[in-house]
Amino acid sequence: MARIDSFLKLGLTQGCSDVHLAVGVPPMLRMHGDLMPIKFRELKDTELDGYIDEILSPKLKERFLAGHDLDFSYVSEDGGRFRVNVFRKDTGVGATFRFIPNDIPTLDSLDLPDVLQSLCDHHQGMVLVTGSTGTGKSTTLAAMIDYLNRSRNANIISLEDPIEFVHESQRSQIVQRELGTHLGSFADGIRAALREDPDVILVGELRDAETISMAMTAAETGHLVLGTLHTTGAVKTIDRVIDALPGDMREQTKSFLAQGLNAVVTQNLIKTPDGKGRTAAMEIMVMTRAIAKLIMTDQTHQIPAQLQTGKDLGMQTMDQSLLDGIHSKRMDPDDAFRFGSDKNVFLKFVTDTTVLPKFEISK
Image 1 (cartoon, rainbow, N blue to C red):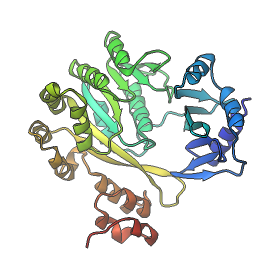
Image 2 (cartoon, helix red, strand yellow; image 1 turned 120 degrees about the vertical axis):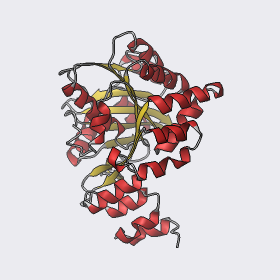
Image 3 (cartoon, helix red, strand yellow; image 1 turned 60 degrees about the horizontal axis):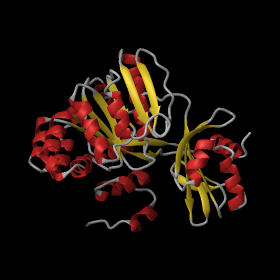
Image 4 (cartoon, rainbow, N blue to C red; image 1 turned 90 degrees about the vertical axis):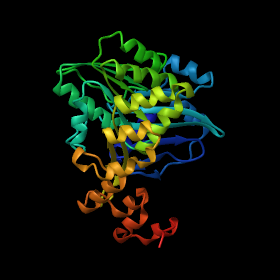
């Protein structure tokens, strides 16, 4: 058994989402959003080098020695699955292990809004799930793929970095391909997927202009494309896509978004009232004629007003989602306050006044 498995087993036993290992500090666990050290000595550089070396394949070792960071999946001896990032910093090696449940989550088990199921029923166009790192984008997408897998006779091609949740084909055929193992880039993966008779293409991250352009082409040519961006809202997502492509493609990109973008779902993870878990708060934008017109006329700053009044279409702002979570007692009001845009709306729900000095509240 690799020595690192002991830390991973401890983390799973404690119910953590991530295990952090770095030189000069003890191992740390991410517990419901908070980072906590375990009772262990500070890790030495040679010690951690040895831990990491035990789980690297010859190809990964060669890549790491060449100065590259590593992203890969790892299965511990007791069957725990992890997404791993290994890197170098000023004091030595560091690594982060993200726990991936073996059971595929469902839209119902995650208590996600009903509109996400209807977004999966589209047969073409693009759906973007966005948010900062660690906000549950991969879990939401896994649940959407699971729904498609159980409800449609489709060919689903998933391009990931690395492969996280492992899906077994049910009504659909699922092909999972990993960056660096099966394909050189996401753009290459989309280009190849278009020759493989796909119905649905999942792109792990729209990280550059070429990938975004290829994903747009796939969505325009009769495929449903699911993808992620590290953006924090519908407006920023649309602006990011437009700004990512060359200036001479601006009008073409706006036209695609107005006609081919089905929805943008942005999420944060908020602590539950008992502090023993987290649940998703979501801003949801569903494309309408009004929003399409705002995109075409460079008035994306007016989109939030459309979200506020689009409840019958499943739309909501992040603040509306947070308030609903507080009223239904699914979300801790103090944690929800941290993520709210209009802090004044959440003031009356705050129970821990120590969070208030961190924010400037308007009178």
